[in-house]
Image 1: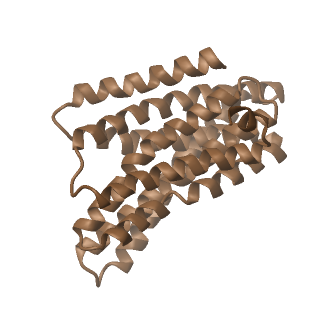
Image 2: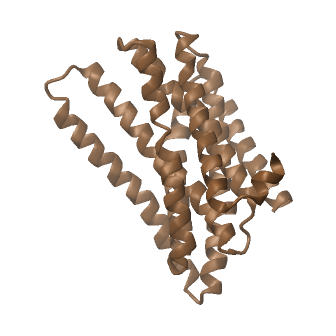
Amino acid sequence: MIDFYINSSVYVQVIIATIMTACITSIGSALVFFFKKVNATILDAMLGLSAGVMIAASFFSLLNPAINQAESLGMISWLVVSLGFLCGGLFLILSDNIFDKLLNKKSKKNNNSLKRSLMLIFSITLHNIPEGLAIGVAFGSIASGVEGATLASAFMLAIGVGIQNFPEGTAISLPLRREGFSRGKSFLYGALSGVVEPIAGIIGCVLVMYVKNVLPFFLAFAAGAMIYVAASELIPESQKNNHKNLMSLFTILGFVIMMILDVALG
């Protein structure tokens, strides 16, 4: 099975990796069938760990290869990478604001619980798009021969995304169940939030493989988007408890794990 994956085309690798992350979202969402409430500390620890993994992956799997690729193309590496990184973060900030305004308009005549439910579904689905893009970019950069890009680092990035997808699936299905949705619908909406990742993964892969001159920009763009998700969603959410120091340690642990795997297997 491992040999098949290694020897597969980059598109097959991206599809398998992103389907895995989407399936983990579904597994997290499926907890609605078994529990009315999941231990918050465990979910917070997973979010903290995932934040650390994603922060490390943003540098070792995306930013560092972006800098190397920009230099090899004769670009001003710090300028291209900085612009890409900032655009990635700003893209999600603007997207968040647009979705928020649209949902506010649509929910004026609806009750607050429905508004909260819609915002929850759309916000997590939105954040799954750059995660899928990042995975696609990571695998596509290997096929493009980017220095420092490895199959191990790309797959570990996918694992990191998958880990944080588990509590995201749960974060949709359980609140929807509390708002009166059936268990089946709550699970379905949670699972569907991860469907965008394989689509975004293929798009990211195609972009970096066939538009090589913008590869450094897109690598940095994906990194900026991931840092935004970690800084605005994962870390704050993991800190909403009485164990902030412990959650911070999980974030550090996630960073160290990803760093060791990326450097040792790179």
